Amino acid sequence: MNIKLSNGKVLPVEMHKIKIIQQTRLPSADERLKAMEEAGYNTFLLRTRNVFLDMLTDSGTNAMSDNQLGAMMVADDAYAGSESFYKLEDSVRDVFGTQYLLPVHQGRAAEHLLAKVLVKPGDVVPMNYHFTTTKAHFTLAGGTVLEIFTDEALKTDSKEPFKGNIDENKFLDVIKTYGPEHISFVRMEATTNLLGGQPFSMANYKRIKEIAAENKVKFVLDASLISEQAYFIKQREPGYENRSVAEIIRELADLADIVYLSGRKSCAVRGGFIATNTKEIYDLILPWLPVYEGFATYGGMSTKEIEAMAVGVREMTQYSVASSSADMIQYFAERLKERGIPVVTPPGGLACHIDATRFLPDLSPDKYIAGSLAAAVYLVSGARGMERGTVSEQREPDGTEVFSNLELLRLAVPRRTYTISQIDYVVDRVCWLLSHRDLIKGLIFYEEPPILRFFFGKMRAIDNWGANLVEAFKKDFGPDL
Ligand SMILES: *Cc1c(COP(=O)(O)O)cnc(C)c1O
Image (cartoon, rainbow, N blue to C red; front, side, top):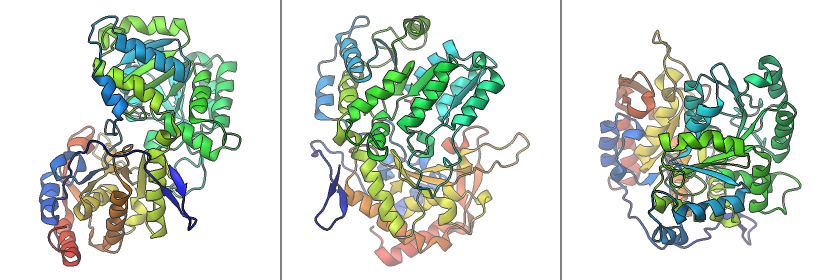
């Protein structure tokens, strides 16, 4: 939670104390070089024993509360009618106000079921921004995803507080062009994960709902990062300063025909669900639940996770929980920015993003700018981020490279997992790297899978720059750090 200090500065003070810890290890610079070379300069292929701070993702990596862990001990392991499910149903009803609950094993399973019953071949699905699994399922069902974000969304250096908004006129155009009957539903993602956790405004959300309702288009809320979304509305939208995170979440949910989420983010568990007040939608999905997920009272989740989720759904509505990673990300981004590092602004809700194109202005896109930066940051710090740029794209069938419109290094901040001193450490190493960026020469593939190459692809450092960077690092810090 951001607390104002006597010198006027703001510090994101942790509103929890550490009760159980997992030992982490800072491998030496030489060890990091060896690990990076074995991983083919791909941070996905590192083993966590060689990772000091894991900033790859906030998915399933958040710290759980004592109440969540305690609840897991009383899980009711029944195939049908488990009491654990009814606790989750109560929590979801209290927080989201929905009557009908369909549990699933994780967020993408909710998307699979929604695609199965609502997306018809030839349909379009307009949304503020896609998520990888969302697009995959809606496309597999024969639909086309239309991203109708505003012009501000892709600007990395921006003051726009709501880069997750839908462009109202583009939505009206979609309705006019395709006709409401060919629109499966309109989807608002809270917050836009792949844009770095950028929120939409309540005003925009209400306007899109209004247009959808006038045209009888269903309105779907992807609530995976809903607590940060509500927190940003409270922080950034006039009129919401005095509304609680819980009230804002409820206001968002009340307007949606369907709410679904991945429990791996805001809820700090592993699981997911679909919730609705519309009996027809529930009845449409229910028969498919046992086919793909499991019986209606567990949906592929372990009962332990269901118990933890019942607690997590309530806890994410607390101000100190909703603000925990958002405030730390703001601190992270501000410390980097004041030292001249090009970060994505305003800071979002799941990670601090560095604009690799501005960090490495002399590297051409065919040398994989963000991939190079991800590898370099690991080499100098042991912190593992994720490339979001051209490596994450796919070549054309004829082999032509598709260059991403953004080259970003994402440094995720899992909720309540790391401390301010660890963030300060990463800031320091990234700043050191900036003054040695000329050493970074780019990457070249030597093993390139035809699809999703960012997961398993292997590259090598052009002109052996990884070793040169580690030599320069050791000159300043010695061999042990
Ligand atoms: C993570 C995520 C999903 C997919 O959920 P999984 O639990 O990873 O399957 C869908 N939508 C958003 C916005 C997400 O962040």
